[in-house]
Length: 79
Image (cartoon, rainbow, N blue to C red; front, side, top):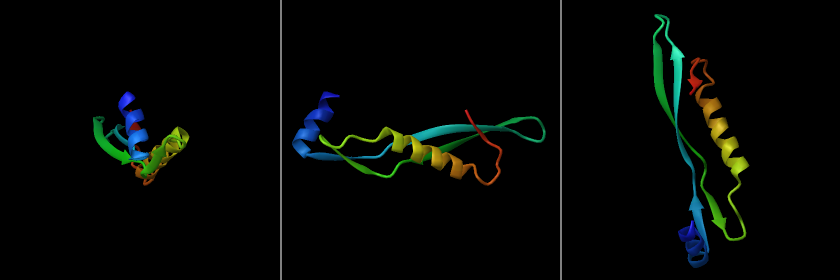
């Protein structure tokens, strides 16, 4: 945490994007469990001493990415 504060003061701002790896599962017709990974990230944002990262926006972007990934009826469930 201290390094981030020093960097903000020195660099004035940093560019941040959040990456998330998620595991999805579903039952196959032969009653097996299928697992796949999904990889998601947010759009980059500038963070400064006067502009914190908006965690609600991060959560909304990641949730939207998961919904979009699963929107074609794959029946995968986020574990």
